[in-house]
Length: 135
Image (cartoon, rainbow, N blue to C red):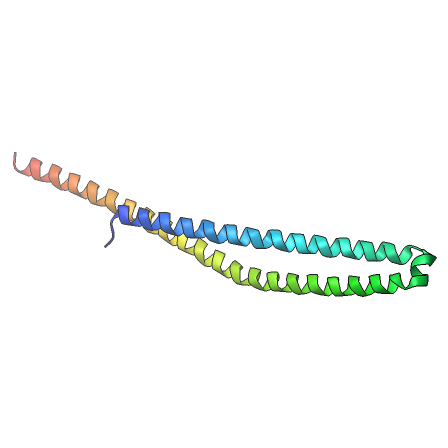
């Protein structure tokens, strides 16, 4: 049987692990946001370029080059986003598992405190009964 101090130490360890998992997850969420923002901006530039009627760009074929570059860039950003989302999915499970450990150790600490309190009360009761009987 573990002592309350051992449970508290376990609680500290699992809390640190949980915070590390959260930080890692937050970095992934930030990267996802950055990639989604970059995709949105690229889409906006493409949309604006399509509405632009610059004949000089068409004459030299720059519009075709631009559209090709934009397509490749969008594909690259989407691939990066897919990778981040796959990693994020894995991290969600890790964060949940780490949080479950935090809750479990907190429950163990609560149970140990209650057991300790009950043992103390029982000891005090036993002493009181013993001192009353042997007066």
